Image (cartoon, rainbow, N blue to C red; front, side):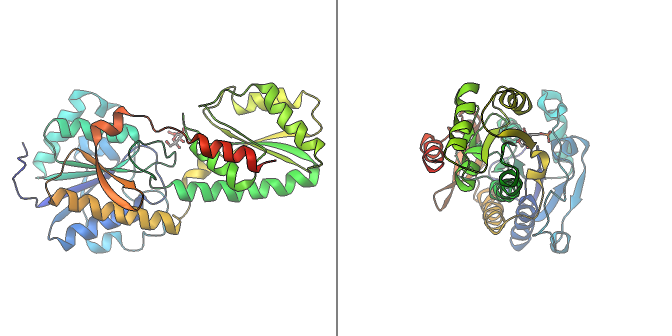
Length: 328
Ligand code: F6P
């Protein structure tokens, strides 16, 4: 078992859960900061699943060369059911002990950070880093991948607007985000959508129809409604209901889907991911464990994983309101 005072010689890094653009720059930062501090750095292939199998790969400076601009994760990722069980966690710890890993850095979303906390509770020195396009993690202003995903959404909606106004149509555009309306809200503001539908707020179908009809009455050539995937009814069903109503525009539905998770990380995500990676190694070397690195304003701060996983990030009502005002 790991002792807090034991000097760190070997660290391991893994990516887990849904991939997010910026994970590669983050891995690069962890590896190179580790090497700069004379540490041995291991990459774990395939997230917690790989940890259970002992899939470690020695990482040198050149192994992370040319990956700054690559989407996805060179370490592969997974959603591991096995790791959720105590038996899987025990096996992962055994593998880490065998490989003489003194500290682990986990890059991923809330499920992954929960996994990191489970390891910390069992004495493993762990630092979590928030990586998820959803931006639904408590304790950090931004997660790795959010900015790139938003840029992808904006690009897609700009294109949809071209065809929408050519045909005088309404488009319902579904964004990812699980139970969070963050991506939809931000996208709504910056694309000038008529309406944003999020799981956090109940919006009756009649209200959606009314907003689209109002846009028609005001002489708009199109209407865009951004729908977060967690909103009910599901976007396809909503589209059918709206299209059956007499609201001026005919309606089309576009589900953006996994395209939002790919692509080269934006400048913001590269920088954020690099800063997170450097801080995670520094935190480990300073004896911290069981914390996530969170972005608070301009500062990188440790946030206990227990706090991160037991709180829900609340959607900004101010932003949602702003989307409504600017759409008039
Ligand atoms: O958490 C990231 C995310 O892309 C969510 O927005 C989405 O609900 C989910 O992952 C999709 O998961 P999968 O890639 O396993 O289908």
